[in-house]
Image (cartoon, rainbow, N blue to C red; front, side, top):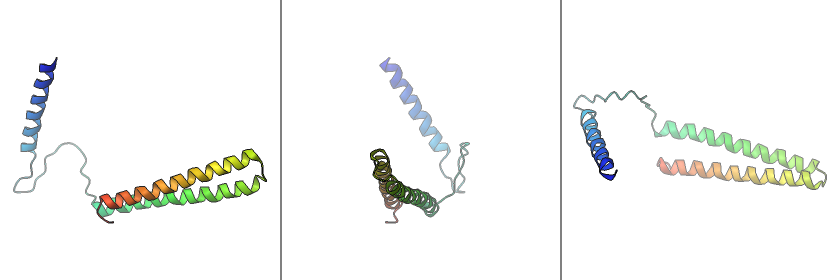
Length: 113
């Protein structure tokens, strides 16, 4: 079975190099038609879209913290209601931290930090 896998890998590598040779940018700058969609978005557009998404997530997390605070007050000392509100606050804070860290990672990767 091992020689068959080696043969298959060598044929895939040969086919890949042939495709790369055929699809390289020529002097005219023509691109190879792979059948895939070509997205012309640059790093600024990607960062703007992700910043908006992370901002929405952060706003939802803050809103959940406020709602859980109201539930905490309205629970009037009930152990179940207090525990539910406390868990909601903890999970919303975790979501807020994850959202902020994700935005920082995206900024770092795209070179905007």
